[in-house]
Image (cartoon, rainbow, N blue to C red; front, side, top):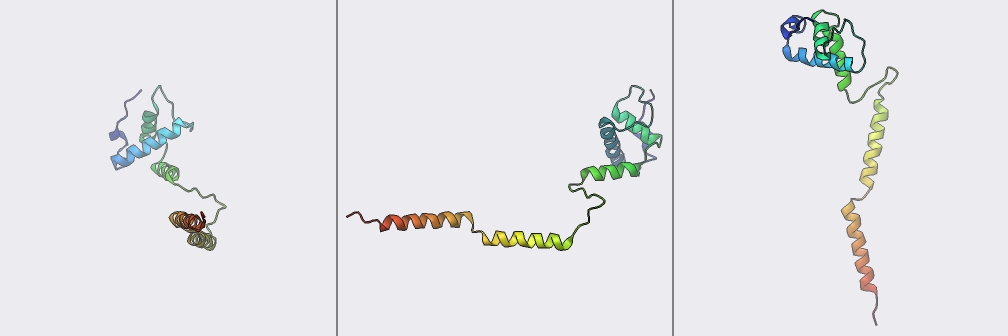
Length: 125
């Protein structure tokens, strides 16, 4: 159970902050059930991740891609092709519907005015 430090990995990933982000990503992958590339040797996931980086068993490029993929809000499949015309027409339709719909306060004020007019029209004689 050798001690792994940031200095062991700094020649693989030159920025300490990037190293920590990548090691944390790998530790999350290991927690999620990813296959280990070396013997765990009773180490916790962050230590295993640092050991894998130090031994160059997993590349920083792979970890960067996985990290970016996990942080993306929209995941495109390989067969999905963004359709600019369809997206624009859907946006235009949504804007048109929004413009046609009266605002809530206008609708309620119209109802109140109609109710007041109806009440004033009632003859109490």
